[in-house]
Length: 124
Image (cartoon, rainbow, N blue to C red):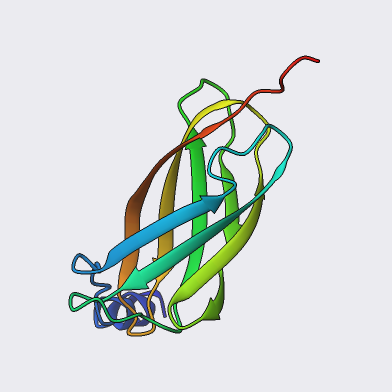
């Protein structure tokens, strides 16, 4: 039984990376405050800059800080190749954004989108 399962898995189609896909992003507001709400908008484009629909994606925000857990949220397709998610950052500083998941053609997407700065609370 075990051999049959291994043989079936070995015969499966390999998962190919989506190296020719472009990811564009913006966060509104561009420098959100700690604990304030932000909206990330991600555009996924093919090599001729046509939008890619039907992907199952997530946004990962990582901070270069020991012990800081990443923020991982699913992206929801809103329109033609545009995916959005609401975010709330718990710490001020620089966050690195990654877009990960699977495109409609089953290729794997794992791209660093860029960096953004989260503002600290301003004393009054």
